Length: 281
Image 1 (cartoon, one colour):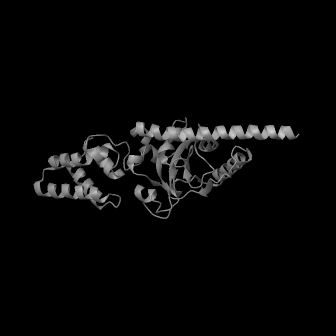
Image 2: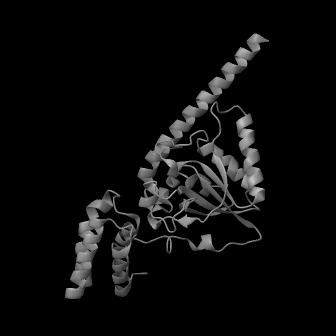
Image 3: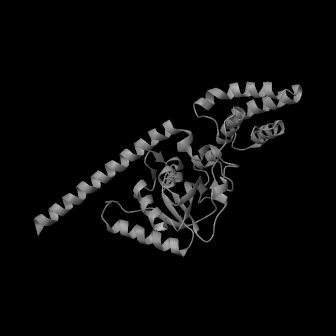
């Protein structure tokens, strides 16, 4: 559905007062607002604004909410309403649970889980911090104590929490407390946020089994913490792998290369230790 004139003007006003809008973006929006008020020619001013934003939009350098507005004025559809898909809000209490995992950049945490049968919806967001309604820039700057995370709604008849935990260990580095892969900083540290005692027990037992397996030479430092308020990330970040497939593939490739290298080192070390043990017997 095409946005109405009133909706677009309201969007411009909201972006101007939005603390997440950068100053240069705000200056363009203020100029557009003043011109619209002076001339009442919305289309011409939106065309001018689109042209001014286009160079940064093409390089993915707009802040998330301004990026969403750019998609709206260029006729692109916005997948999520207010950043949250409806299917994520309609929870069947009898057969559905939530799981929250932090494991580095949330762009790379969606696709592996979303492809699993039984996963209903995944939302990227921020949790574990001290600031309400954090923006991407605030979290990325490490100012709020939040981590980037994904909130998963899954059907317990089709997939178990244990299966999600097993996958989580496969796609993260549980020995790195200072970030994940190429993403450095406390906002990327690995954390499992549990909803209840049942999830806590599964997570703790799984973590202990991983530690006992000898797969990692370094200690397993992934935290297990009670779930806190989950703040949805801006719409730009939702299902990023679908919106920016080329950029996502580059990030995913680097992440997978590190994981394969880490797994190879682990196998070689275990074989070497087994050989040394046999030689001493």
